[in-house]
Amino acid sequence: DAGVIQSPRHEVTEMGQEVTLRCKPISGHDYLFWYRQTMMRGLELLIYFNNNVPIDDSGMPEDRFSAKMPNASFSTLKIQPSEPRDSAVYFCASSFLGGNYGYTFGSGTRLTVV
Amino acid sequence: KQEVTQIPAALSVPEGENLVLNCSFTDSAIYNLQWFRQDPGKGLTSLLLIQSSQREQTSGRLNASLDKSSGRSTLYIAASQPGDSATYLCADQWGAQKLVFGQGTRLTINP
Image (cartoon, rainbow over all chains, first blue to last red; front, side):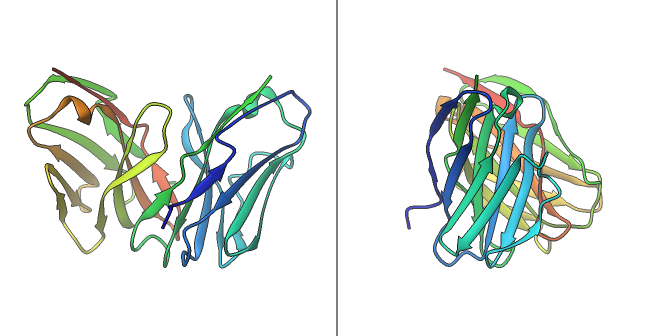
């Protein structure tokens, strides 16, 4: 398996623009997670899905953030409108049967909002 | 609320030394604990997973232990090499499926 695949690797956008981050989890994994990493706050869970259904979005910072998982092999995280404080590395991770067998992370998307 | 603390924040040692990285958590009701490695500008690579019923896991030169009663985990690295230089993160699975991360230990192995 190619692992968790995220795109794009880097994104630079202007404040106010819409940004869409994409993730393909490992085939067969039933949980998908979106994390954000910053120097100040470290790694924070934004939202996670189980069998394509959002379970907990309490970590989503504002209504400007939304996430979808239309099928088992694809998820998006959208920020609209983007702000400079959204600049961070966004990671997608997937797991099987919760975390019993561990979590696999993607390489991340480095977002810069100018 | 679960909190995970890693000490020290940074560590620099000469090549060949054995070393221990520490991780502590406030709520012992964890499911699993996982150690990750992160290289600069890269993603997270899983090193070891300790399930709640286990006390330790080993992979090559790495050994991780878990003591739920004291709220601690340690990552032992034997015979350190320059290639081990990275940030090491511990994360516990606490409260359903949530992973809570420590801030990491930035490790530098000097040749």
